[in-house]
Image 1 (cartoon, rainbow, N blue to C red):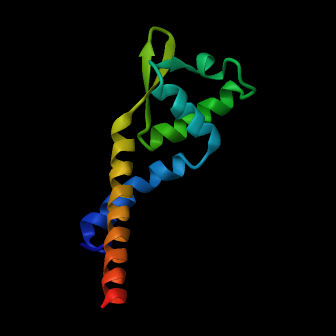
Image 2 (cartoon, one colour):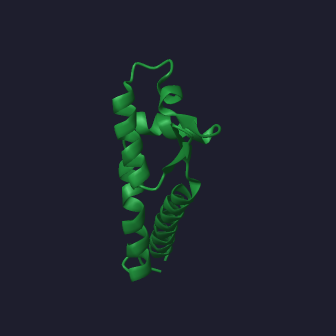
Image 3 (cartoon, rainbow, N blue to C red):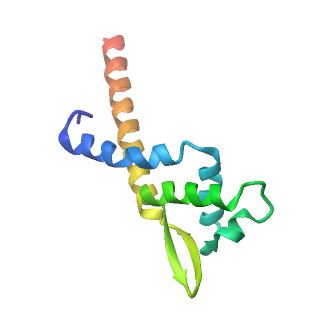
Length: 114
């Protein structure tokens, strides 16, 4: 199994926006908050923080583009909810890379021991 197979390359390419979106501390905190409960409004997400609603809105847009959150209109309010499927895909991509490393280390071990 090689990272160069087209299915592996496609999986990693598909996961790249997720990792890019999660590469920011504020976005990671937003995901952590949304993972812990139900859908929340921007007002709820900014409550008790020094982050402006505009900044949170921009971060949520990045997360939405990566498929990590979705917005739900509830009356006049817009709520944000975590979307776990994209994170699961990214996790599987990391597991695939880990498997590649494990295989490479086993080959190295066999070479060194022989």
